[in-house]
Image: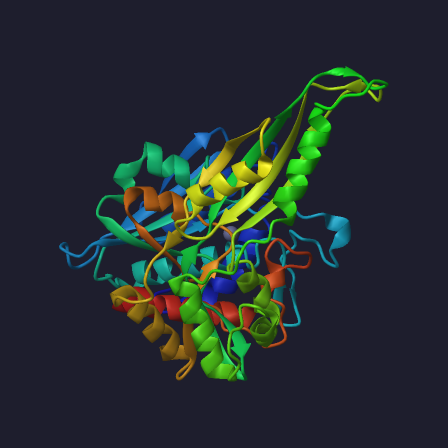
Length: 434
Ligand SMILES: [Zn+2]
């Protein structure tokens, strides 16, 4: 039993997790994470570690366990994953999205890359530590959260707000959407996530004078809203390079010989293949109108009309973006937050970053590692409320032809079994050495 290595069981654990449907519809109607949490707690307890399950609401379960390190003066590290997945429409898939079939060397199923793959890596490493009596240097807090796919209100955010003592002494964290490889200029390059854009979900409410649809009305809320939405949706946000993005683009220039041209970003983005999808949206703020609502009868002018706008802001620009959106919306349109979450950005430097790079090099010597900004968000936003610095590091060495960035929330989500084994070995090295 003691010679079971992380790479020996990571595939099986990933498959078993995928087979537990944890679809998160964002409205509480899904199956929740309880069954998956019990499965995870079972794996932890099986190797003699205590696991605590705590619920934020019935069925919305989180799991946590803390492994003591050998150096009590060292700060603790949080290694976390989320247990929920976005829904999958069975008839669009070529396989059962919850079947976790192993086909052509890949595991197919919802969560294969987001993020039951990393959950399985974490579990296989912690089980190996427990079995072999390996003691990490620092305390490691292993956490498996609910509800990441709906902003973490029932998961990481709940844990941080209601159970902050669980993260006592922690200063850093690692989790999803980073550490994967892409081939840039013919060179395998790992993208380590050191920044996340902020989220501002805004509601626009335009007001006007209600009246009969047959009359002249120069104060029509629907017209006002439509104009505001058009101005916001068509606004050309300037290209702005944050320190992280500049460092990433400089690295790409070094690998490809192609310089970044702000007037023609595609020149360089074209060098990135499918990773361009991740990077393109991090060169600027974005403000996308996503929903319109107004009126109740064909011949009645309503007194108000409403729109939702999904804004993703560059690090540190949340207030500034709100101000510009308010200007664009104009008079007679109220702009307010429905939901907001912080942006993050930390230097691509320090002991943990060095250790992550070293761990990658232990399995893939000579590979290039670059920092990048994530256009979406992760549970690291919630952990940042406790002053914990988070990185995206779910290591995967990927075949060049796999459209990895398209797998996130995509149809036929899948991950190579060998990539998972690679990731388990890298994570094992990192947590052993750091
Ligand atoms: Zn995720």
